[in-house]
Length: 258
Image (cartoon, rainbow, N blue to C red; front, side):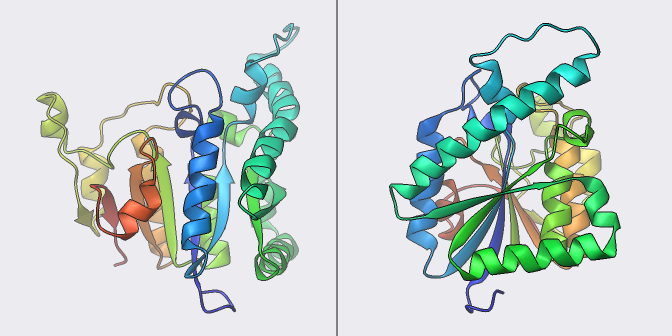
């Protein structure tokens, strides 16, 4: 809980959600997120971890590749990140919400001084009603591009900030049972503390637009659980997905504390 007495939510939004499973970033989805935050801001404060920089750049840039694909993706991230932030800023500002950008690398979490700086900076931003929008610093780091679409970054950030709730917005109604996936009648696991059973249930699927898949989301939930933080994995493609989850109006997976 922040100094304001509000519960602090870390919202992680993957590429599939931001593009609504197309090849283009959806301004409408970012507007939907802004509307929900505006609706919830009296009781909750938000920190966002957002993917999507590469997807934004791919909408209007075709890069010549002289080297590895990873370098092209890093270059695309560099081109796309300012555009992604501009869309957030415009959509949020229309509702009177202020945004800021934070670029983090995994190495930042390994240095004590860096972690202190991250926490202090984000706390100052949130206390002054700015919503930090965090992405991995893709031009120097390749972890998000290689490993899991910011899922791990969101969990490490949630743990560092000691948030009240980690919400991972994806393109499914949470985690489905393996049996229901085989039968093509998806049934959501509603609530559990058992990470290992989730891992055995989750199919090793890689999401189409992102680089994650359900396993990386369960790994993120495990990091959060070890920090005594509850995780909700829910369908961010639906309008009003956070408000509906908070009001118990939707089906999603809740991974509770031990």
